[in-house]
Amino acid sequence: MHDVADEEPQLDPTRPFSRRQALRAGITDGDLRSRSYRKIHTGIYVAASTLLGPLDHARAAILPFGESAIATHATAARVWALPIPPLPDEHVTVLDKKARRNRSGVRCHYARRHHVSTVEGVPVSSPEQTFVDLATLLPLVELVVVGDHLVRRGLATLTRLREFTTASTQPGATAARAAVHFVRARVDSPMESRLRMLIVLAGLPEPRVNLLVGDGDGVVKRKYDLCWPEIRLIVEYDGRHHVERVEQWESDVARREAIDDSGWRIIVVLAAGVYNTPGETLDRIHRLALARRLPGVPKRLADGWRAHFPGRP
Image (cartoon, rainbow, N blue to C red; front, side):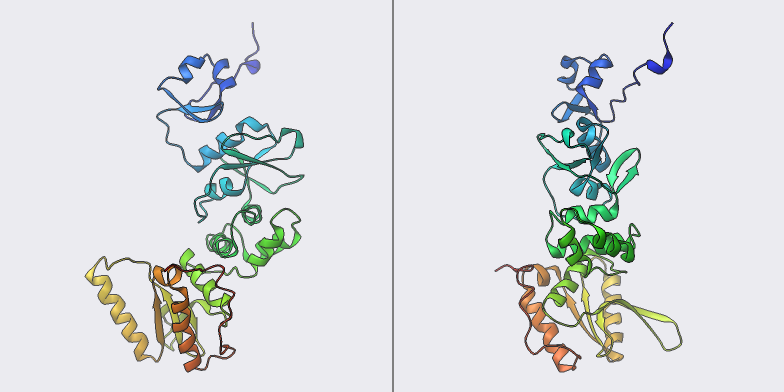
């Protein structure tokens, strides 16, 4: 009579598994080479019909590294659905230095301690820890985009993010502290974050984010992406490549006419104005800020934005 507790857990082929686990479950090397299975990494497989999501890739990445392994950096960012650019490789951090080793497609890091969350049984860097980890991979503006998104989605509070980066001594902590200085609450989109950073890095006074404007009776009528209420100047990002519906276009026109009637001035910025011609966008904003006598506006823009927004011919 055998002890049920000593039996090998039944293999679920729709979740990443190792070759060793497969052999114990009676799946041969020939089976693994067949069309029934797909190799994710060296020695890591899954049923060929399985559609892999970020959490599956995280599970596959940590599988060869033992119990101390944590999905971190870009892998954790993808699990948390953070807006990061395409980055190669999966990332794993181990707390046992002896477990650190190179594997194709997986970058392995070592840390003495790590702030960890568990997502469906998978150990993943906490949102705050992921922010610090990403500071080793992302430039300043893209890291601010991540920070704004974390706070907007409630994955971290602004206070907690600042406290965590201040206390951290891990790689990326210094860059994370520089970025968290620019993170703001209530930012609706990554492009709003980038547009705000373009403005701030040029030395212009920081605009208010998503200000709610009422009609004088306490009823909110409009929300402005970025604005300086003291001079009634608005900067808004419009991400549509074309007008999808006549009704939406008419609504936008009516809204902007109402803004003009109330004495506000609006500057609408498209994606090309951030990525292709950031200098022209800044010139438009700067001219109106000077004309409307925005307090603190410099006569000449700073060059800090150029390294982050090089533009395109």
